[in-house]
Length: 439
Image (cartoon, rainbow, N blue to C red; front, side, top):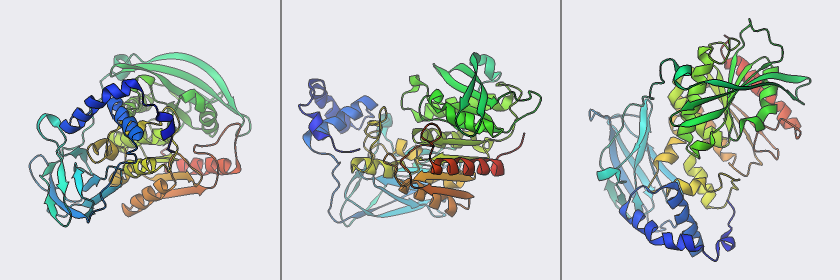
């Protein structure tokens, strides 16, 4: 995000009144709300203390070990500590669950970790308060053991359509300018889940499709209102896919984990036949980008083998390095997400949400992957794509990339279709046909 310090002065009276509360919360180590995190960021911006300060004193080291609930060592876990400006320092545990992280700037950090098959966790003390470890110049700090629990997604209800009150809200025909004569029959759905009404579920089928013939499923997770992406959905449906699409429900705000569970419900509905007989029970590919790539990364963890592959377009790979780009003013995040990074809190104290939205650290769990990114991206730099590609290859997962020069952060199908957008579309179609399952 570019610096806009002049716009923050004079400092709003409401935030001045919040300043003592912010200070108390951070000194106490309690997890503040996103609103308080943002207020703290705006306050520090006004005071001229952004980007967050990082010590330039000689570095120190951190050691410790990662265990399971039976206190047995976990080998191959990724351990992270992050600087206040987001820069991560990481290591992998050895066969005894031991890790060592060198070259860490002096300061206070909270250790976080994740391993294949285990949920992300961070060091916490009494009342779930983040447990800080202090790194000192030229010294090695021993952190307390960090225990990880198996990652087990909450089961979805039996008789899912009835429990969530699945209902059709509209049917209509939609057209697009690409490919030629692109058109689809569209059904809109809504359902109630986990305290929210989700009315952003859509099914796109090739127009006049034979209802007796099942189509391979393509699952789309969009970063903004699903109907704004209608040209994209229609284009893929014209290629003889049953496209099931969903976008974030407003009631969830910026909670990518909650959006991911909504998407998991939609995927289960599609594969069960609840969204119509044309959709086969094949393992589909999922596709998302930008903010929805964070949703998709959580869906990939919770859905597991239900997805045969995924495509990420202009996506997030490492939330720590994206936070660093934000604090250094290297990226420009558009509304309504422009304050999403500071809303998560300081990465050195609250690393867990950053770790949860970073698929590079669980690359060995990913299915076949296609990464699409433009060098012109000002929202998430193309280095995100390079880092994810390297991690997936290191995990011996099939990966394909399409890097291009363009002005678009997103899949550019619509009025502003470019040659790169056209080529990108057909490369994605080919990837989906090769890795997706037939019904």
